[in-house]
Each structure stands twice: as structure tokens, then as C-alpha cells.
Amino acid sequence: MVRFLCVFGWALAGRLRPDARYTYGWKRASILAAFINALLLLVAMGALVWEAMQRLSAPVPIAGSTVMVVAGIGIVVNTATALLFMRGREHDLNIRGAFLHMAADALVSVGVVIAGGLVLWFGWNWLDPLVSLAIAAVIVIGTWSLFRQSLHLLFDGVPDSVDLAAVRAMLQALPGVARVHDLHVWAMGTTEIAMTAHLVMPDGHPDDAFYVHATEELHHHFDIDHVTLQVVRVPFTEPCGD
Image (cartoon, rainbow, N blue to C red):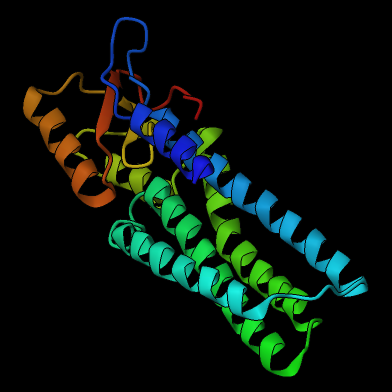
């Protein structure tokens, strides 16, 4: 729970308003929260695997009934909490991280109940660590994509939801645009995307309607919220680096 509250605090920091010192605000904190959440889950699963391996080599008696009651309470609490984050998990890495965090705890509790019941009825003490290993594998598989995506965004990678080639093609198709270069797309936070680009327009600068149209198209097709376009006037024969 302490781990969850710490990560949740980072996520709230991402909602702080921009100021003279942090002109983008603390939006990147939401990505950092998702990364820390994924990292902590992976570390926790590593510890679970280590403990399970120790118990496989030296099985210990388990108080099956007590373990089942405590784990049953955990299932109810963690499942209810996970459901709160279920709706927004596809659109926000941080919400997805919170969902995985609570779902992982619920899954561990389910495994404990199953193992506790079998140990209580059949005396299979060796089954508990095997169930732990299976649960750890499932959680690691589910968490790895969150870890990879959040790390990717921390290094200003292009968000998975944005096709950079399609963005370039859309800009290139705008009236008067001969070429697009210095195109950069990155995530400001887990829910906001920014973009900058230079548009080569030999006929000169367009009117405001051009910028409004370009911004609306980028938001509609790629969910890009912050757009900065710089128009440069370069002859068609003059090379222009990408």
C-alpha cells in the first residue's frame, strides 16, 4: 500500500500547473510514476520468485485455513480497487500501472487461496511455491510492456499511438508544403503529446487558417495536443536536412 501511495503521489504531481520555473509543469512525473510502478512490480516478482525457489528446496508447513482467510480478504479489496482503474487503463500509462499493481496483488491472493486449500486438504506444501512461480510469470508478462513503454517515453520516444510516417505524410499533404523536416513527436505526460516541425513552403508564410487547420487535423488524427510549426522558405532545389 505504501508503494502504491508513493507512485500515486508522483501521478498527482503530474497535474501541477506550469510556472516560471517549470514551464511544462510536472507532466513528466506521470510517466515517471508509471515507470516506477512497473519497476517495483518487477522487483517484487523477483523477490517472490526467489522466495518460491527457497521454499521449493526446503518446503515449510503452511497454516492453510488462516492463509486462506487473509488472502480472501485481499482478493475482495484488491479486485474492487483494480476495477476503479479498469476503464482508463488503455489510454493512460499511469492508470494502467495502478490497475496492474492492484490486479497483481489480487492475483497473488487468488494463488494463495488455491494453494492454501490444496495444502489444507492434501498436505501438498510443495504446491505453494509452484503457484507463486506461475503467478510471478503471469504478472511479469503483463508488466513488461508497461515497463518498456514508460522507459521509452522517458527518453522522449515517439508514443506507440502515433505513426510518425503518417504524421509526416499529413503535413506534407497540406497546401503549399513542399517538404517536412525537423519533425519531433514526444509525450509530455501519459495523456499529452507534443510535436514540432519545420515546413518548407517556397511561396512563403500562410495565413492563420492554415495553422488552425493543421493543428485540428493533428489533434483529430493523432491526438497531438501541443503543436509548434515553423515555416521556412527554401527553393525546391536547395537541399534541406531531415
